[in-house]
Image (cartoon, rainbow, N blue to C red; front, side, top):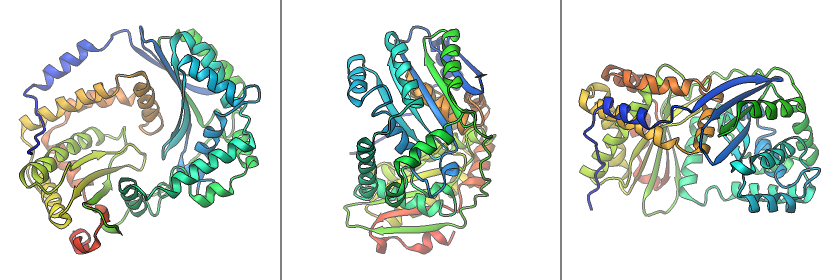
Length: 436
């Protein structure tokens, strides 16, 4: 079967016009500080769902190797009981009201999200604040969470997709805090005691690290009052000064995990601008164009790979990524590198670029329609992308991307690619990767 990616013959102006017309004009986003706590509130009139997220900036760069994994460990345990609510009482409330907790673990931040119906949000917020401020951290529940996390870490290599991600992340970020797993290691989680979590909660969940994001059909005064009360009960803490990590992944490298599989999984990482950087809009468009060309070359024309793709991650020390699944890794890698070289040497034509710009804006809008998606994007841009306001700036800058910008970012960033392969090492010549 031959697969084709659909290209829509529409102009960027038409897409932007359609998107603008479909966006509720009443949606407003406000950022402010109350009692020392940074708050971002997006009012979405008519939404029956409300989401709130409490975030701690810093991530792996703040926590360090000795306490790796402590923040998701703490949040996962905190939702299992507070000083005034048992685990059963919390679960009963969640089930009866359709309220959901979610623990967030990213390389630059972590957090806890609660999502509920609008008519239940007052009670949900009271529970949310109680979990954040007064977690019970009951020893039995703590051990259950520890077992859950260590089991997940121990089985990380069971799935080839997870194994290749870990393999190439360790290779690319070997000299950076990102090289430590988001959830820590089996040894770091084993070392953490209840007293460690209590101390961390007391000393490191502070207003100078924290940010609060709320999205839904609420009143600004109501949000301000809730945030003020939460902030009043939180310690201020010292100003957060994250260590400066000058990151250079070095020359192109290859790591292969020998595993008998019907296909070989290939993942390549290379430098990328962080969200909010002037190069970021052009880079994301370049990755979309690269993804389309990889699909056309490796899947449609040569049947070398199932679904090759390229994308941009969202970290402060950021990377782009190429994914390929193939039975012929040497031929596939040669084709990937040839596509990259052509994109650097030959400018994209105006029609292809206009279509890519239109599709990029549309996908961005569609991807962020839900309340939870909007919450997560506001948090990402605030904590990684130099401020939540940069999200709108990014959309405004996309139409200004030109063919010369695509060539510039391809030449500047898509080099010294670090490849991780799970499969047969004999089929992947090291010189093919490291010789560039």
